[in-house]
Length: 300
Ligand code: SF4
Ligand code: SF4
Ligand code: FES
Image 1: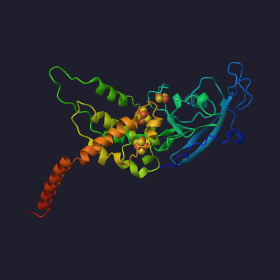
Image 2: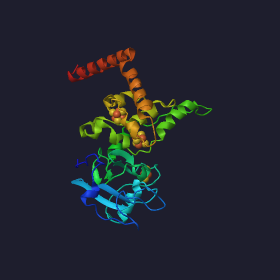
Image 3: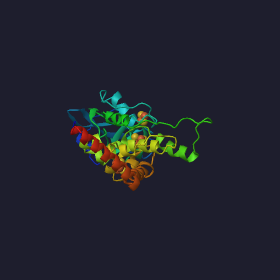
Image 4: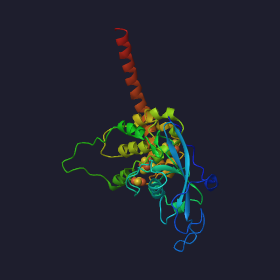
């Protein structure tokens, strides 16, 4: 895995570190200085610390450019691409918080670049780094294919046969699933989850919060026939989640990942794994299977 950038430190004094000159706005007078008549009190320069690198390693590059009213971080990244850093790589698509492409760590916090307003960030250099949990491709672009591999392991929706008068569901069941369907697959929750953020070795046995809501959505669907509880326990690593709620805090769709998906799934898994009657049945089945295997191995 390539070197991942350290968490951003918004307190670094980029202005004192020889920031490259960007595109000056007429009348500009330095970082943090008062803006023109239209925006009294707003800075007219912005300082950016943007991680630049590839799988071999990298570092933060510092830039300064003119502030513009109403910009989000992605706007500034685009202006850098148009001026000082034409080879700066970033991923984006909708610029409306809906495609989930522009995920990054802004001042150390996982956020969407297109939904983070510059004027809401604290005064001082704005640090933009790629998501730490995933391998670097280039600059702000990471390889999130881990998530697609996990997605393939979740058994698909498998409905009961359609009754003659059509499928019917309670409104409450529809609304429960709709919350999880809001996911835009930005993978910010996966990025922040400590189980895999600094533990690459956990990835093969951990699905992560985005997929815990997928499991929950399917398991709670009243028309679905698959039982995924053992799968999410044994292969999805649900037990490794210790309900810190960090995933919920960074979700741009405000999905209550922990309260509405993970905790109910843990309850369902406990019901499935530790229900005494179910346990007895599975134990008998395992004994039967073991005995059959032993018999086969012993030629009996
Ligand atoms: S609540 Fe669980 S899934 Fe969410 S960030 Fe914490 S450990 Fe990860
Ligand atoms: S659950 Fe929220 S944070 Fe996680 S991938 Fe979906 S939208 Fe992003
Ligand atoms: S560009 Fe689509 S979510 Fe940011």
